[in-house]
Amino acid sequence: MAESRLLSTEEIAKHNTAKDLWIVVDGQVWDMTEFAPEHPGGIGLILKYAGHDASQSYNEVHSPSLLPKTLTTSKLRGTLDTSAISDSWSKPPPQQNPKVQLQNQRPPLSTIISTHDLEAVAEKTLAPKTWAFYSSAATDLVTHKANSSFFDRIWFRPRVLRDVRVRDTRSKIMGQNVSMPVFVSPAALARLVHPDGEKAIARGVQNTGIIQCVSTNASFSIEEIASALSPSPSPSPSPPPLFFQLYVSKRRPETERLLATVWRLGIRTLLLTVDSPIAGKREADERVRMDDEQCVPMGQGKAVNDAKGGGLGRITGGFIDAGLCWGDLEWLRGCWRGKVVVKGIMGVEDAREAVKWGCDGVVLSNHGGRNLDTAPPAVLILLDLHTNFPEAFSALEVYVDGGIRRGTDILKCLCLGATAVGVGRPFLYSLGWGQEGVEYLVELLKDELSVAMALVGITNLKQARPGLVNTRDLDYLVERVDAYEEGDGTMRKGRARAKL
Image (cartoon, rainbow, N blue to C red; front, side, top):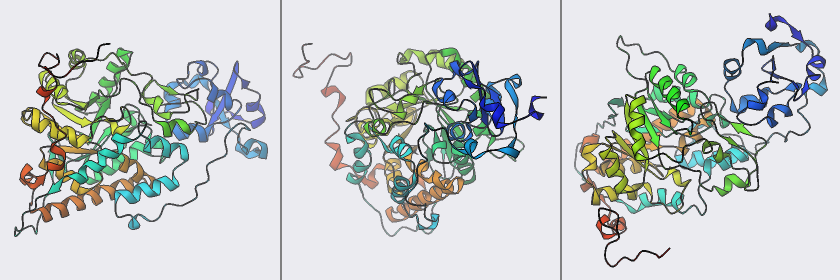
């Protein structure tokens, strides 16, 4: 068998052209000649390692099982003979960029006392490209900054002399029990931070009782992430603590096959992202050029250095169907029997559409400020619903995703009618410590939420209500929808439309 055939470095090095292309990954020698031209990330990266060891580059962005699943065993030429590896073989290809030398090491988790600490450590310890990708936002960062700062403009109205010795942060999201109403927002390529990537997040949320929403652009396939979970011990297993975030592909059959896989794994809630028909301009991400082309297991996009820069963010956008419309929810319901939550609602008009089309929930989100700058902050969209469409809170579950960094931010959203909130970047930053970091952050936020509840004067989340917050500093920014246009979209008298 090919697996038992030992191949020397001299023999492997002979196969170093596009017409005869071998690479080594984790000690196995693969013939990539036929596959390389079809590689979603382009042939360039594979050619770079032709006749050489590509393990480090491969493992930074791919799961170990991807190659065996993609290629047949007939392409496995043998295993690397490690008994006579020369110094020249151990050196990286001459065109490879030097490995990033981190200036600071991560401190013990016990020294981290807030999400701001996590961000400060991430900025110092992540590779420059990884930091640029995760921290970047659209153009002038106005929306990105406002997502957080607008929470500072909402004031509590605490009640005192309540018995708050015991507090309960438990809740439900889409019928699933959670230890607190928080889910890990979907984010691409978590393996850039830690080798276990989304698998470490999955294990962390399972151990702490919250939910992870897995991105279409995750580093691992959804099967690999689900397999990282411990089996349910109960005789009637509950759904895994996973939701799935979907970008609809231009190639609909691929999306349908992906959804069939997600359903087979027991996942029953889908978050359909609708705020990213194309990628926004994330300048910090564009400025740091990529070492090479990269791709993701479940998405079909790729990112390349070009005249615009080196935006890794474009890896999440190239395959997305920009023609997706509300009417396509009929197609989606035809291939998905579970819950549908529309992620990326930025105005009351689209919240009404979500109710009209029978959605089960909405995520009020501007994609972390990463797409359209000066789009409304997430919590301002929540106030928009209160003013213009309060019926939304009884018609579906409302989630807020954007700028949440404190337990007080969580409680403010719940007081204003949200069912739960999504937290994104802080969980990526916590992943620097692997699963332990994820669990640490969950407990940190849960403790902050519990303290805020006690100091506001409530003992369980059903007691959260609008009367406990003062939103006057933001209310004037919410204008009634009918001040802009009639129900059919025509402009009201007194508001002129540009002649174009």
